[in-house]
Length: 165
Image (tube, rainbow, N blue to C red; front, side, top):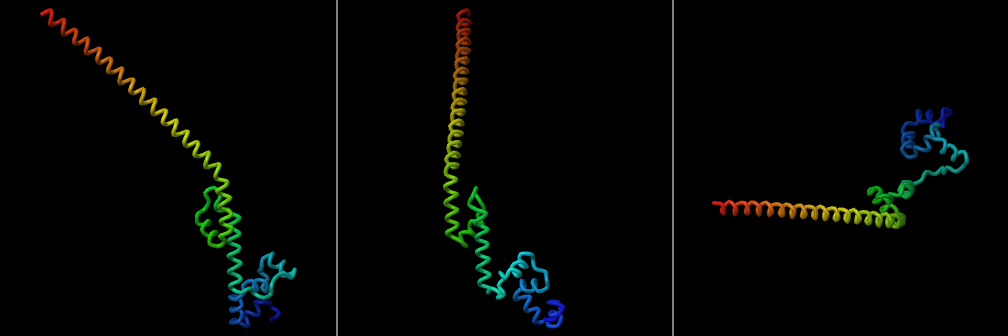
C-alpha cells in the first residue's frame, strides 16, 4: 500500500479500492482513520478479527443483536408493542415465551383488581338506577293519589250541584 494510506491506494487502484469498500467498510474505516473509538481499541488490543465475517455470520449476529434489544425492551410489559412482540417471537421464541409468562403473572393481580373495580362500578350504577326508578315510581304514585283526590273533590262538587238543582 502506498505511503499516503488507503486514500493513495484508492487513487492508484480504483477498482480494487471500490471492491474493498463494498466488501469490508469496517476495514476501510480502520485504514483511512475514520473508525470509531471502540473499533480502534479492538484493533489495538488485538481483539479485532482480521478475517471478515461471512454474510451469514453477520446476518446471524444482527438477528441476535435485534433479539437481545427486543428482549431488553420487554415488549410484553404493560400491553407492550405488538410488532415488537411478533418480531421477538420470530427471532427468539423461547425468550418471547419467557417474557410473555412473566408479563401474564404480573398482570394477574392487576386484572383481578381491575375486574373488582369494574364490578363495584356496575353495582353502584345498578343501585343508583334502582333508586331513581323507585323515586320515579313513588312520584308517579303521589301524582295518581293527588289526581284521584282532585277527581273525587270534583265529583263531590258535581253531586252537590245536582242536588241543589
